[in-house]
Length: 312
Ligand code: PAP
View (cartoon, rainbow, N blue to C red):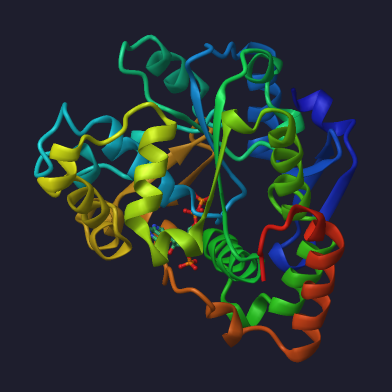
């Protein structure tokens, strides 16, 4: 793997203390995700009933994982003992390209959990596509994703804001350089695939989920084959799940304030609190100048206008 890595084009991220990303299958990836992608492509075998939770980093992954986990385990655990109250959503639902062994272990259970991934559609292991697996795709306003990504990566690398110019981060992002390549290509890949198999895809928009969590949680539950009954709805099961998975609740749990997660055979650790920042729509307004807004809006129109998805 190390030798293979050296053969890929490399880019040095100047605003990130010279961190390196590699180009693989036309996507810039950081080392951890690149190795994990290659391993998953070589080894992972999807089952036809597997459900995938797909997202670009900072698109709403943590929230989607929590909701899907709560929906699926609602009969196994009482709402007051659900593992989400003592375990990070990222521990509850592992990533295909980071925790392959855990994903494979989960596949053996009768009540198997969804599988999370940030992989671009064209990078997914072949069996995910040939098995015609269901895919939930969550996406978020591109400007808020950029701000969220900027802070997450900056904090992970312990770089104070004054040493990490936002303009530089934005320029890189607009050039398609990030830990997971270009956000627009990520969305386009899933969107294009959904055109020929719409029944296998559910697109959720972060902002819509905030405005109307109930109907979106119901859509999610139906799509993953665990619809709520009228009785459950009347008993407040959906409301309780929404409350448990809310930013306010999860971000205040001890595990999400103080816990950590080891990644990639102890290469680095991520403190759970980094997945919970503000969760505020439109925080980008505090970072973008007029020129930046023009630049990114033009990019969104050019690259994603065809999809009809609203990302501004
Ligand atoms: P990931 O892809 O690295 O797992 P992801 O969860 O997609 O990250 O993005 C984190 C964002 O979701 C953060 O947004 P912010 O930086 O704008 O604040 C985080 O605050 C937000 N977030 C985390 N949990 C929730 C939640 N339960 N509800 C709503 N937003 C959330």
